[in-house]
Length: 236
Image (cartoon, rainbow, N blue to C red; front, side, top):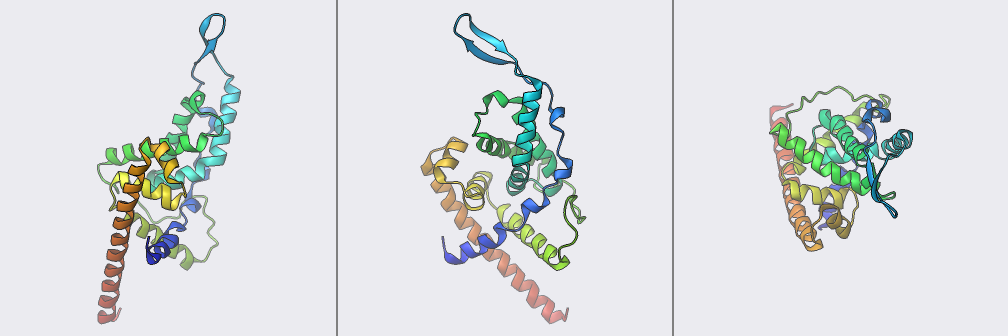
């Protein structure tokens, strides 16, 4: 990737998505319901049902929420979920996890949550019929410290909007590969395993995504220069 593109990416990648995760609205772990029955082998009588204690499952879900809620929130935003829908999408990811605890091998929680986030974000965007149909507002999200400099917060918001705009130009497949590799720091083999695709396909998607991203940034800069010249001529 070109050096200029890496500079742009480094700027927008740190735009503060994780700062807006609304931890105050996290669903209570006990609200996710009873654990599902698990089938485990029995050496003497074959398959039998085993129920883990609800307290153990609740504790595990609570641990997942504490450890991964902010990351999942940020990721569904980067996958194209509008800000005002991000809480619901994130909670849906953890509801899925709570229902499939038996399938999540200890130590593999993050890959499972990322894979679920990919599907939840894609489904939500399809159900909306457009990428910006959740009502957006300019109010400050709950959980954000109002003390930072107002200008710095405005700059962060502009950077997030820039990233949203450029990523919205990518197809879902390219966007997911780009976000996971360039913004989440996953390797190509990890992405291939997560998405169930060959590493060569990951490399192809990344190449096309980078080209599209660079083109999007170029267009964005051109529009910004045009607006600046217009305002200068008008004396704004």
